[in-house]
Image 1: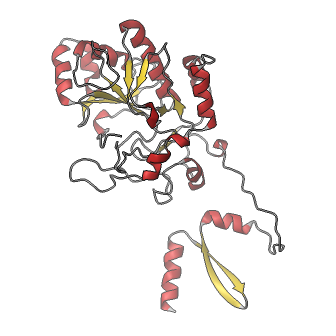
Image 2: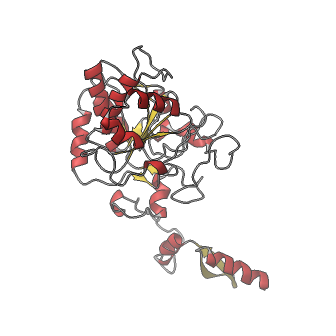
Length: 349
């Protein structure tokens, strides 16, 4: 009897609801979750022998308003990491780096199924842009002007992406995606609008192509390599993008050679884009030192210097993180604390 009482207390403490059911004269205790309790309480007292199938209406985005915390029902349908997270909306933060193995893995299933998560609406958007039936920048401007649902949930290190927007390379934006077969070119509308605008301006002004690495998976979540180890400690919510250095030599992959003049022009465009405010740009300390020497008399560098932070693993690209606000005004997020932003690149994806 003591063991029964102890089990009962543990289950009720963790949010399970007890119900009592008679089966062949024997009374059984059943423990169900709160969501199950709502469904259970709505069932009729007696069901026919051949009952009609009970259908549950799929959760709509309208069921969750901007600014509200996501519910477990919402996350179970839209967060690809909901089960690996232990049925929690927001998973644990990744710990990457040498001697830090804890929480450095994500499900191999996600790695294999990343491209299969692309929705019909996302494929349709890609097709329309490729067929020149849709101007992506004008379309995204219209979307950003209208009240729209939140897309990035939780945080950049343990979140997910709802209604992710694909970035589509076109002749007008001059963007090259390093490995398009990975399907990691999805972001929030603000992020994708910023990259589209950035690619067009760089292509028009400098006649250079923008090389893009990872943004996020179609539904966000953990990005991992073939072994299952996380490739990034962030890139889960569509608000991070890896952008290759601009160079005088042509290429389709990231390179470590850093030209301070070209890449300061690139960074100025990033900071002054009108679509997404900038929280931080990660860069290797050696390249930051090169920039500081080149720009020691530039007042704009003195103003923006604190938003360019060293982080290991960024010797061959810029890591740009955007916020929820637009980029108008100073270009940096009003609530930005770049000194608190972190990221570590892990296994190559």
